[in-house]
Length: 531
View 1 (cartoon, rainbow, N blue to C red):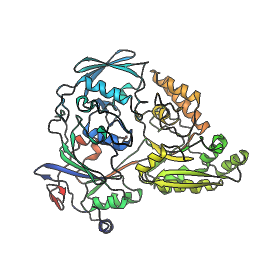
View 2 (cartoon, rainbow, N blue to C red):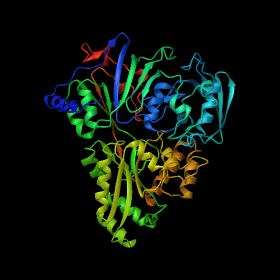
View 3 (tube, rainbow, N blue to C red):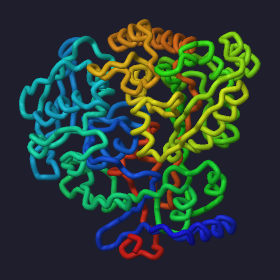
């Protein structure tokens, strides 16, 4: 249990520039690590939720067919190589000598079973909608057939975390926010096995002694992940030796952490876009594009980044990050309070009106303060906002009900591509295909959907870029959502933890490859683990 006294110790250490000794060590069971994160994992099912925490977990217990390298290229994992047989058929050759944690051998039918299951998942099926079927060629070869040429098929294969068919079959139902066999049991091929899970307290992972990747430099034998919602308490845990790694680091603590010689701050530019979704389904006011434009113009994204994020983000005037094909250089944040007031007057709402808003208070960087700033800014155009903030777990259940007028949410492109954002956030909502899964605004523009479909088939890079940029321009005119900023990825580690080598812009650390240089004098530990 994290004690309030640790916070006082943290402040004392920070002011004096002294940090506690590292707790990592090489005990009888090898190098061990403790990570404090801001929230706990909801489910053990790798296909239930398309979320950051779920994918971080999946890279520990399961393996994808391929994964991203830090330079944006693909690294073979359970797939060793692949070959296009024709424009709509990809042959994938699978790794020999791989076993699930149950001892069952990894085979092609496990991959086929997994892809079929992903196509049934409400969160993942839009990603896999281009796949018509999968054919098993032999025990270690599959053919993946698509309905049409698919420029992002390899991107999608980074999400095929293959599960053990013989372990799950007959009890593989996916129940979002509910209890299922897969939500409380796990059998993957990954570098770690789940040893213990105590809800609200900890998850303990131990290294898989039979892991296939013998070339991995990773040397951590045991990882304990604990949920610590308080920013100050997480930092206190790091400074007093109760944790080796924490994430996220509060913006207010960044300068302090940078001054500590025993602590390393890891900061990467992120591509997660934080936005406001404007729900047109219940309010006539929000169905008027002039009102939506006024809301956008009344929000000062640059000021939010400067004052609330302390510069640890990039103000956004569009959904596509700079490295994405759909990014349009000319679409910048356009704060203009006078023009916003003019638009409200033209729409007949000069006296304003009242809206409801929900936002998480432990999901994104300073999310509650950002939401409060939005409320204050909208007051300048006489929109009174009733704000309700909730912890992540409760927030997304309420979010899915689509009852609030404004909803603050973040989206990390799963494929590091603009079209993924469009497919999930602004496409017309379609329960059958999964398009618009997180479009809670009621926005539906057939032209945007047509362009999304075209981008999903276009193999020519230049033509595809033009299509994506055209979508971004349409969204700038329609304003179904208000882009706020892209937030930076922030971790802090104790000396000797080489996390920067295994972390990417999607914020998925490959902990199986993590190297930790054990310190000479572990602090209050037995074998490197906090007592």
